[in-house]
Image (tube, rainbow, N blue to C red; front, side, top):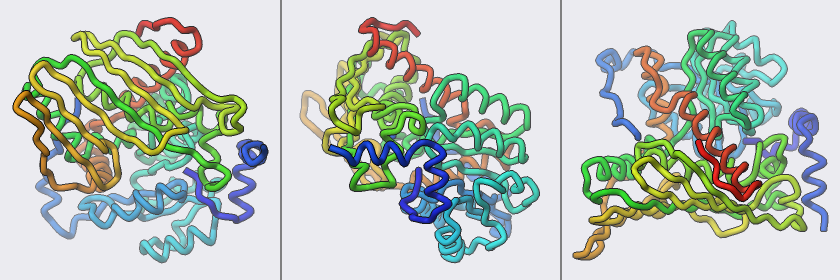
Length: 385
């Protein structure tokens, strides 16, 4: 997730990835388990928090994820990786990061010699996740990477293999699987409160404006993003359908609509509607779009009740409704810091030598299904999984 820094190093970095030309074109005419119990060792306040190196200091990293470290019990920011030296220095001062722990994309590999870094958190465009996962694993560091995990099944597998070979943890940052309302929805479904599941609808949309927000321009460049709305935000609908049912889909169908006269959609798709069929018979009807006002919701239908979460994957606000024949009931839950929970989980997995709740294999499953959705949309035929 690239920042809007105007430093020449960042511009050069993006030019090399093919972004500058794309911006010019556009300017013309992206079944859960409960949290683990607190570690006994962690009761000791003197226990060292695991050090995280943040790779990529864009809007998401600096405005959403990095501030969450203040609520972490087991994770701390100890290094920054950026092509913008001035921005990195400013953030280092803000977060108490030693200036000697600031890296750029060229000297990143020297992080292997820094014992203050235990985990590398990759917050870059999807096409770069594989490269920095492999470099981090080679440097002997555990890896937390943003979703989508990568832009191909092959790259996902390379990431998994590299971390396994290095004996390091690999986790994909599916924050919704650490968010209280989503966890409550999963719990209610498992307890049978909705009865037998029949159907799921899930919609995610946003209006992408690369000319107004240059930091967002990478989203419409296929070389960087891997795809359009499906890769960026459709993955939320897809992943939700999987963790709500606790099943893996057996087939997909899909339709795409993209106005190719719109400069934003010359390389990537705008809107995709896709349907997932699950072994139990549940059908999930999902939509992702780059040309509708922001939506991030799902509704789960059972034969006894429905559960509506809207918004479902927001950073700070969630609204849940349970509907039965007696009427609708609003569910009151305390909002939690899903980012801190996610970061602490990664740290606990390293400390306890446990497999992360959302390991590389979880990201691989989504990418494999996403590729099947693209195939279904392209051919107009259902694709078996």
